[in-house]
Image (cartoon, rainbow, N blue to C red; front, side):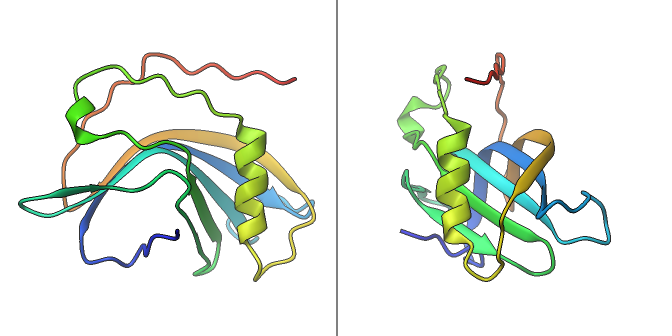
Length: 137
């Protein structure tokens, strides 16, 4: 299932964005860069209801840079206020997300940084990240 990022509903998302250069280019303002989002949870809402973005939802949006994302988890609003553990194999979701991008021929990516985020459009959300652990295998 793909979500429509142009939806009229208010949105909230939690996750990590990998800031990537593509095809051996530099990560800068003049090149086409890749902003790859791995969402831990996502929501559409209005004044009376909250819809959970289902695990496995994805999107690709290419205004100039490439914005692509994959929802790796779904957290029910009844669980708000409790700690949720999310373990993500970033390599798996990078591969899944790159397979969604068909408009650009991406042969390689280089991650230059990451952003751990809580983002909202038309709403307010708070999240506390206890820690983030990364490692390679």
